[in-house]
Amino acid sequence: MKIIAKKISKSDLIFALRLRNIKSVRENCFNTEIITIKEHKKWFLKEIKSKNNLFLIIKKNRERIGIIRYEKKEFYYNISISILPKYHSQNLGSMALTASENILKKGMLISNIKKNNKKSLVFFIKNGYAELSNNKKYVLYKIINKKQSIKNSKLIHQIQEFRKRNNVNWMDILKIAFESAPD
Image (cartoon, rainbow, N blue to C red; front, side, top):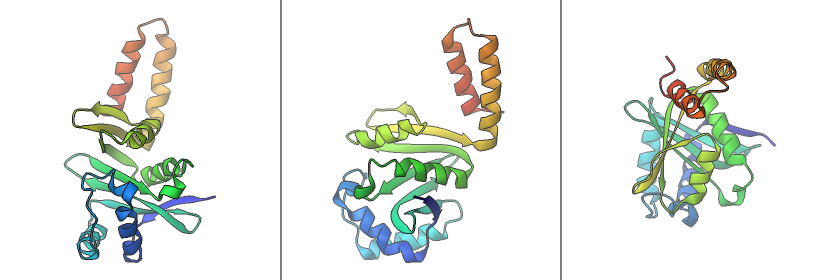
């Protein structure tokens, strides 16, 4: 089984609309209304032309199973992921997320999750996201920088070995510092 994430194309327009309008997918969106083809086409064509955003189709072997979208904001990307319900609980979303992060390579990622969407909350935490806030919605974040991350892990391990007897909280603060501001 091969999971790939690749840039979405015009030929994926109807798939993306059908996926978005599935009841269980809509219930987890902040806009729960059914989207019309006219609205979707206008939005979709604008999205695939965007130079700042990354809009990906997820495929299992050759079959389309979902989409991942990274929407560029000031200094971070809002991420959203939708997988066809029949593929839930098979770890395919996690594999697709990893594949998409390898395409993006680096950046701060933010996921906004409705309070009642516990499955998404568990999914993102399982995939390395940390909670930023949880007032009216959950806001989770993750910082990816593949090259820097490997260097940071080695350095953190060396420091941990040296400071084994020190307060564990100090190491947690150090890890957060490396993730948030590696330079």
